[in-house]
Image (tube, rainbow, N blue to C red):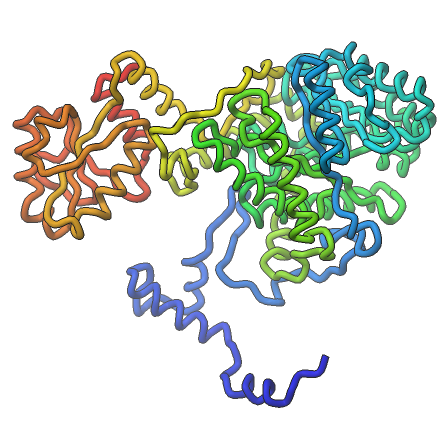
Length: 607
């Protein structure tokens, strides 16, 4: 395309963009906010805006061509798409998970999904899912040559695989049946503390290669590390370590390197951190391509990735917001080049999903594929200097963690020794602290809670296996506080209450009163407001003074005295500063969970 001469003249009228000039302009803004001074060197300005991920990867405010590693779509190391032509426009595999223990209900749900856009089935079997013996009945009406089936049977993997393979052979689908038998002994060890058999997994892989050429035997599940609160690099590094362990077992059982690579599929979590999730999937392919290179695999041995929207990010409170979270995560999965995507139903934390929730889950992907045409764009994030740089940084961090696991004797040994658990726990402590201080806000939970919400009712989901790495959710601390409030309301007929003592005109106190109300309500604590003199009639025992810094200097001490005389057992102040009679402060960045725990205790709400 030729650029018109008049547009060239317009561009020439502007000075060339220079990094130094950008730094000067940013310094001016930071100086006004107090983050920089006149003496701050220009080469330190970008550092003031740079944050560091849980993996230690710097996330800068500005990226240029120099920071983006080169790469082309469809070529190793496959960070920029695996299939740049042909297959790519068909989209990814829309995979729905089913775990209802009633075979009839599960069968009906599977058929409804397959008739309405789902292209493969993920079945939870055994403990916490469908009985293994019911598998033939559950798959009655499912065409195994058209709809891939992925098994997830944990300790019952060998039994479930035998039932499925017999069913495929009985139907004459041995050559065409596709999917994955779900063998993952290392993932089982991570979840339950009791590893499965590597020999059984290898034997299943050999059988698939010999008798079921379109079927994979091994799922390399990275989600246990994510669900334990781990970072992206920790999930990736553990997944690569597991994959390498399986390669050793499969080649030891007689498969060629290429046959072994063809038996593995990776399962990774994607969450509402859109660019982090995009980088994670791209980094996974980069890492696995490196493993393929040193293993002598044929060119094109790219990682096959099944992306699952994060269970850790899902909330029980205001579950409708989960639709937004999973939409962002699914978009990231598609943009990052996932081969298969599972969207968790928005009500997953409440119990077994109903038909409406499954419909929303599958239609989320249909909208991205059919209406947004996401899959028709080759490598949507490709060429973004930010995305490329973040991918490379994440891959390097994950490779460092992988090599540390290898030095410890491999993933099985690292799990047994506690190396993995300790590393994940340290990361979770950092993330948990950020959530508690609302640096990582959770809409509907830590921010903008709805105390009057009515939650959908769902059948209780059977518990899954435990005993291994912990399973956490980002909202758990705030939701535990809300549960205490609910129990108190059920027992007494009223929620715990805090009085917001507002000083001055509405325009002066509204901002801090709104902030304080939002904070206390995140713990299930009702707020009422008024002048300090109205505290006695409020029915509250705890108060929070809300106004401007100027009025605090004039009236905070008197307000605290009035509240104390009216019976307040604790007086908070929204903001900072020391004033007579004020016990403590609530402000942006404070430990909100700690504030709420203290307040519930002061209000006599039992744990």
